[in-house]
Image (cartoon, rainbow, N blue to C red; front, side):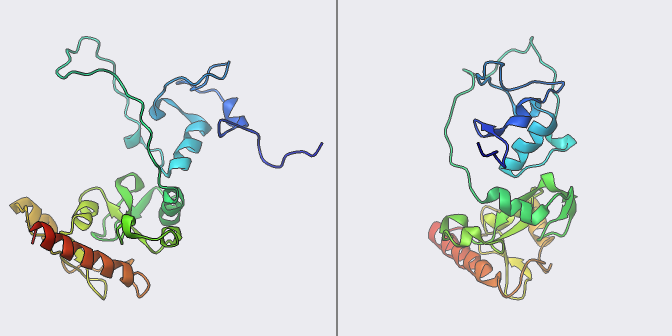
Length: 220
């Protein structure tokens, strides 16, 4: 019988990871029945494998440890967790790997801040819903954007990237506050380092889409 080159998998998880033990919790019983656990309760090589599958990393900020509060009185009608089925972006893991690799720190393409990769997202330049299947397999359709605010400012159309790579005020003007104006002004005139002749087509789509959206919904 021919030996298998790849590790045997059970329920999609490599066999060698099922034999590992850690000091927290193991999501499988000895009989193979799946138990409900949270990712933050899993450690060791299994957690690294799970995070790699969804394009995330582990750092101290992502694994908070909160003590149980058995005396807390519920203030909402909490009825327990519910099982849901969702679609996962199949290319997300590879695109995030392309942007960040194994680095722990990276730079936001809009504000230029150096940040932990846990505070950066794989932001689509061209709205993902409008991308073709072929475009979703390209690495020049995404850029690092920070959770401090740049990802939302770009996605909502408060800022755009003009031809030449300069960050400019977007077509969206409402709703607006003084604090939001300060956040936008801090980005204006900066150079987006992922802009080039190849990515310009995606930035151009973003400008057109945001302009049409602002006009349609009266956000300008």
